[in-house]
Image (tube, rainbow, N blue to C red; front, side, top):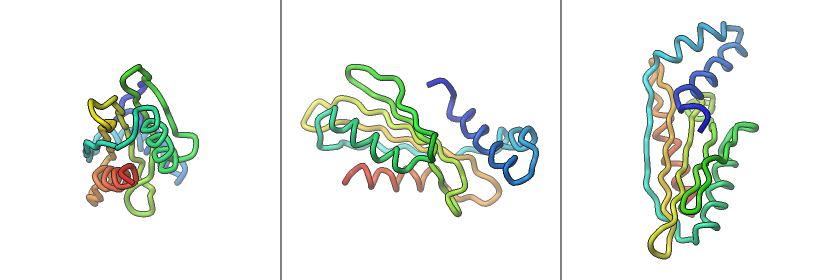
Length: 140
């Protein structure tokens, strides 16, 4: 991945701050100081590897913000897919969602799903809630 999860979250929050009339630089500085809420879920999708990758891409692409989709780090036995989704109240809080799809040993494909968001004074647990929501969609 070109950028770390933290870098992406800071840039997304800074962009939101500048849209609402604030200073992008000041908002970015404050965003760096915020704690992160991250949650990981391990899944097994009962599909062959290539089909599972396409399923994960469809689900995450549908959950992501327009223009924020990344399909990176491709390999023979694993694929990494990353999007920036919206979480929290009004889906305004940026959430970086990363799925590592690995070729399974049995009839399924392993997926490690991680969602992370910055937390302000009001704890929304946007990372955790987004991970749970997307894990439910991936399991269908």
